[in-house]
Amino acid sequence: MDTKITKGISKLLSYILRHSPETIKLKLDENGWADVNELIAKFDLYDLTLDFELLEYIVENNDKKRFAFNADKTKIRANQGHSIAVELNLNQAEPLAQLYHGTVEKFLTDIKLQGLQKMSRQHVHLSADRETANKVGGRRGKPVILTINSGEMHKAGYKFYLSDNNVWLTDVVPAEYITF
Ligand code: HQG
Image 1: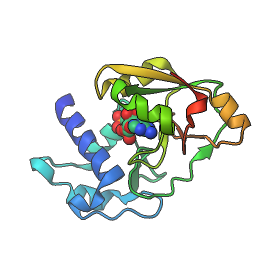
Image 2 (image 1 turned 90 degrees about the horizontal axis):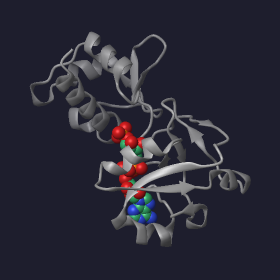
Image 3 (image 1 turned 120 degrees about the horizontal axis):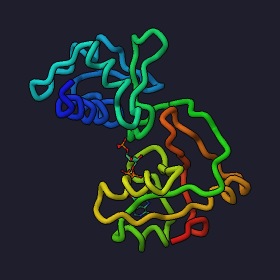
């Protein structure tokens, strides 16, 4: 499989399924699922075409397991990362004592004042290890890794969720739980 093509299609799928299904006139249900046949039929962006075999390959081989099928593979959705309102019915979970967040220097002043906010997404995204946080921060420049005192947050009643692709999610991280 040409990785350039599969990567390109993965990026477009992330955009469509997390942020903008209307770009290809696709409808998601309230849980973020799209009908697979409808997606394939409507996926005609930038001369890229999709068939079921390619979609299945992408779902199975995507480096971060960003997408999931339902049991009979008639529906597909993004596992996390949405900006549109969808109910993912995420599993609440007790977090590790520490989690990590990769960001960049220019956001630190605001993060110190406001804590970590969801910004345009449905949750604040946290990583279980520094290496992953480093990659997340590296998308925006030289990464800065913040350590989150998630154990204490959980004790204080903050809820944490673990997505199907192992991203830790929460609603907000107040600054007092962040080591800068
Ligand atoms: C920052 C990717 C100012 C925050 C990744 C981040 C992740 C603040 C940016 C997933 C702030 C939001 C999400 C505040 C947070 N003031 N800036 N109070 N609070 N920020 O993209 O965590 O590859 O929405 O530090 O791997 O970077 O697409 O969040 O820099 O899992 O699957 O505001 O996206 O996954 O950016 O990334 P984002 P994120 P995929």
